[in-house]
Length: 160
Image 1 (cartoon, helix red, strand yellow):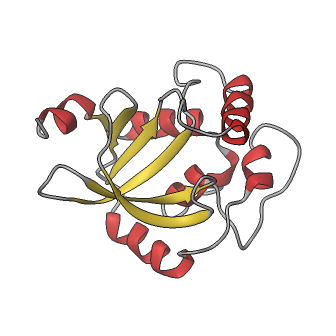
Image 2 (image 1 turned 120 degrees about the vertical axis):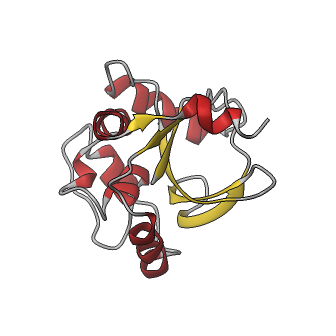
């Protein structure tokens, strides 16, 4: 399954989203400390766009949407052992569930996660990892790159 990890600057976001990004990056460290969001790629379209799925604070929770990814803002990993069909089943079961802001913050600070809400990498990792919600976006990217491979160049090269 293809996973995308956001490294962009969030210049188009409102102040609340930018504050969240700042807090996320402040609490993260290491090589992938600039990653602030994770998506599962469910379908690649013939026009170069993709259907992505995750939980998004900006979009209000769990959802799928069609987008064209900017190659300057994303790292794409291929985790071949993860079957995208499990992610699609999770989407069918949780589409519309709210975003779990307290759970996302609990990856950095003391706190708990909701049983009826998700944040991005917890949602993407749930079908495949035990305790997927204990990882921040930077740790989740490191896991994906450790068990999968970076296909960013090939992914975006095929869309030119």
